[in-house]
Image (cartoon, rainbow, N blue to C red; front, side):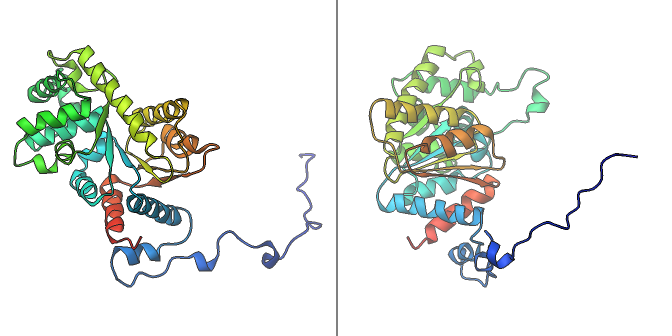
Length: 312
């Protein structure tokens, strides 16, 4: 038999719930949605956790637009693959997107949409015979674009203006942003993207263009100061790392960078976006970071609809 006995709780002190209080109160609960559109639905959400975070993100973007501050969208490949480029293009035209930063996957998928109206191969089916990533037109034309003196994003946009299929060009973010004169930066690690394995790939061209765009991103990040917004959407590693380096470069060069908003949208919350986007940029500098979890194909159209209907 154990020498230990259950602890006697008869002397435990208690406190009234009315004296204790609570972080969750009835007045913060959701209200029943009774129609009235997206704005009314947003108003009906609980004033708890992500309900208030989502409202705060909407307000920050709307305020940045009103004040003509930088609204910079960082996009991973899945964001383009799930079909929301038309939403982002519309937000750009409405003033809710000033500039875009893409990882290599996002640029590839968008480029393929522009020239062929389709993207995203079945990797498991083609990897065994080594044909994964061997689309001739993608590799040939993307590498041809990088032989110019322009940065990565601008070079792709300029090239697409010549070769994009007119049936699909209007849903290409690269193409439409170039025509709209909205900056697009593309950030790659050589070997991560399938065009790097094409026979025409040149490391010096890829590196030059991507380094150009890192320096351009630093300029865009500098413009976040005092009311701008950076949204990291669907990039778990590369863009959060690039963004944090840009933040450091801007401050190292003694440019003010404080009191802006950062947001991470993803269907999983990963370490680097949490620390590099949501937390670290605001240490001792004001501003606020938010994490919003959900599928891009739902959350980005929902955010866009809320912005369009905002009263701000």
